[in-house]
Amino acid sequence: MGDHVEDYPTAETDYLPHIINRCVEKANRHNVPYRFRLNGAVVVVSPGQTAGAVNEEVQRQWRMNRLPRDAAPPATAGAAATG
Image (cartoon, rainbow, N blue to C red):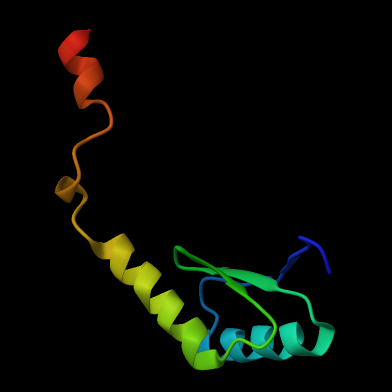
């Protein structure tokens, strides 16, 4: 199997449960991980993984993307002070 991951093509308007079910089905059938991207989430579905676990990962990534950006210091703050 190695490090090979198949990409599952998606569009912004795709229905998340359908994508999850298709990737879980393909990963299990072909014994190869499948990666999909949807609305900022990038998830790799491994063979044997449940649809519920995949959905939890998507939701976690979406929550992380919604966090206020000012919670972390800006990457350029140090450069501006020294430059």
